[in-house]
Length: 80
Image (cartoon, rainbow, N blue to C red; front, side, top):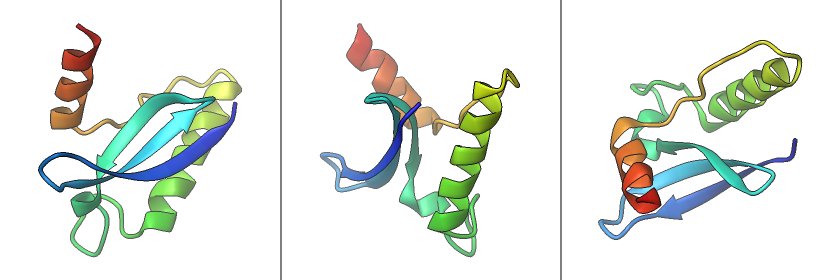
């Protein structure tokens, strides 16, 4: 397990933070969901929660990793 985090911008100039596990995209979250009014209070909070989820998964505790719905749709579309 090698988690990496990167910032990405799409064609519409929307900003995301992407989480990769050993090079495979496993989570992608709009930066609009991070901050005082967002799902995560800070970027550090999001990263810490993602790491905790992966550590628990590595120990056999199942979790669903959050992927924002519009991004999941785009990912599904790319795989077709």
